[in-house]
Amino acid sequence: MRSDTATLTSRLACFPLVAILPLALLGHPIANAGSLDPSHVPADAQWVIHVDYESLSGSKMWQKLRNEKPMISKLAQNWMNKRYGIDPPKDLKSLTMFSRDYREYTGTVIVQADYGADKIETRLGKAMNHRQTQWQDHTLHTITLSEQKPSDDGPSGDEEMTIVMVDQDTLLFASSVSNAKEALKLLAGETPSLEGKDSPLLTGKRDDAWMHGAAINLDQLKKHPVAMPIIAQHQRIVWSFGKLPNGMLYEQADLVGQSEQIAQKMETVFDGIVAYEQLWAEGSEPMKSLVQNVEVTRDGKTTGFSWQGSSDEVVAAMDDIFDRIATWKPILMTHRRNQQAAAR
Image (cartoon, rainbow, N blue to C red; front, side, top):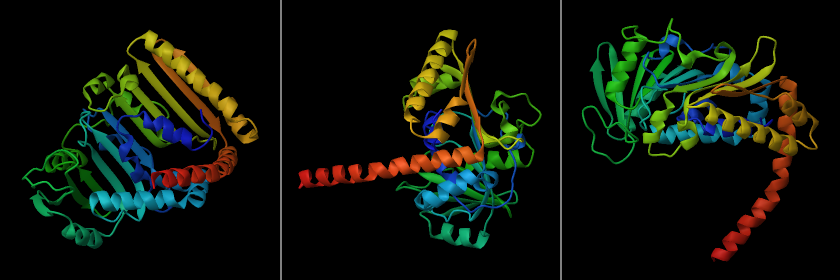
C-alpha cells in the first residue's frame, strides 16, 4: 500500500473502466450524500463504480489535495467541458457508473447534482449535431463528439453522447439513445436492478465507501482491445476506499483468481508492493505508520489487501509526499530543457 495519493491512482489504474473517474474531481464541497444505491444498477451489470463525492470532498484528505494541487480540479472540469460539450455540475453529490459489458464506451453514468437546466440546454444547443428525442416524459439530448455523421440511435463509442436531465438533481449520461432509455427504465423501477439481490458487485465495505468499484466475469476482458492480462486472469474484483464509523480511513480490495495458483502469485505481487513502500517510506514517520498497517491476505482463490489510518496520519503523509515531489521538479525541468535544446 502506498501511503500517498498515488495509491489510489495506481490501484484504480488496473481497474478496467476507470477512465471515467476524472468526473469525480468536479464540483465543490457540500454535505453528505450516501453510498451506492443498488436500485441504480441493473441486475445484469458487469461492473460498477460509485463515488460519494459529498463525503469525499468534505474530508481533510481531499481538502489537502485541492489546496496543494488545485490544477487537478481545473483539468478535470476542462476535460468534461471539452469531451461532452457542457459545463460540469457545480454542486456534485454522487456518481454511479456501470455497463452491461466490457466493450469500450458503452457505459452509463447517473449523476446526482444541483445543476442549472437552462445553462446545460444552452450549451447543448451549441454542441455538434445536437438533436432531441422525446421519449415518454423525457427529452433526450444527443450530441456528436467527433466528426461522424449522426444516426437515429447514434454509434456506441467515442463519437456520441446522450444526456438526459431526469429531474432537478439527476443527470444521465449514456453512450447512445438506446442506453439512455434503458437507464430511464431502471430509474423508474421498470427493469430489474441489484436492489435486494446478493450480488458480488455489492460486497466489501460498500456502505462506508467514498469510492467503490467492482467487476465480475473478468475473463471477458480477453476480448477487449486493450490488453489487461492480469485482471483477465481473475473472476472478479471489489475495491473500496472511505471512512469507517470509528473515523478511520480505510482501503480494501479483494481479487478472486481463476485458480489458486493465480491467487498465490497475486499474494506475492502484493507482498512485493508492500516491501517497496516500506523502503520508499524511509525518512517519513507518517508514511511508515501507514505502511505498517497494511495487511495482505489470501484464502483459496481470493487475495486481498487492506489498511486503516487516521485522517491526520494520511494528511501528514501527503505533506511528506508533496515535499518529496517538490524536490524532483528542478531535475525534471532541467531534463525537459535539455530535451528541447537537443531537438533544436
